Length: 262
Image (cartoon, rainbow, N blue to C red; front, side, top):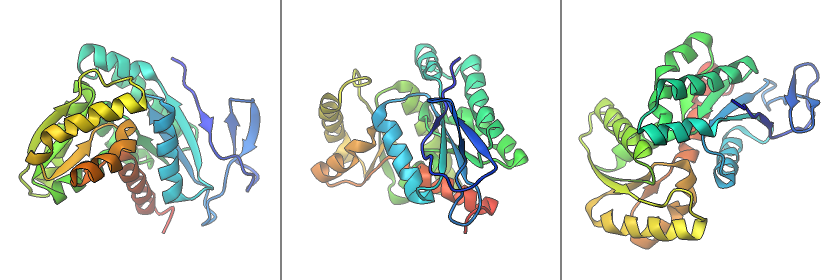
């Protein structure tokens, strides 16, 4: 398994701790957060579309500042194996956990799991994260919680069944936690996975139109769908939520609870 680590911000602000930029093999000094505390964030992907990476990194830096060091890890075979089997296999879960642990070994202060298809696998290691003092945060959990707060009828849009079902499970779980009964309307967009942006927007907009009269709010399961959020909201006049900004905010809250930021 090829684990790729990308160091996003390479400004030199503090001597001492160092991280390896594998792109050019040069050791770069790690960054210092504005509070004077070194801040490293592990981002774990199972899909590496440029749009998703750009959006996640932008949202995280919006929450934590430009000086945050983002350590990215990816293994697309986790998602492909999950798609092929229809669930997260033991081997796929083991590889995912290996990425989390690699981030911890590299000095991450917190880890953000980007993939909703494996969100329930990430749930299983959150107690481990508490024990070792490195929060493992799901990108989508707070999105699901906010959707449950804001609406009783939630439309759930996804391009993969292996993303749709775990997301629905999470919505129902967090709805129970807040004592809110909800009903879910599926919006599985067959054939949309892997299309270019314009083709994808067309299919997504069509599916959103099919369910919009039956829901109070529309939830986009996959982070890679986030660029369509405003388009759907403006077209149908319904609130729409997507995960990257929620995940970034949850990451910041986890770091605040850890005492690293105010």
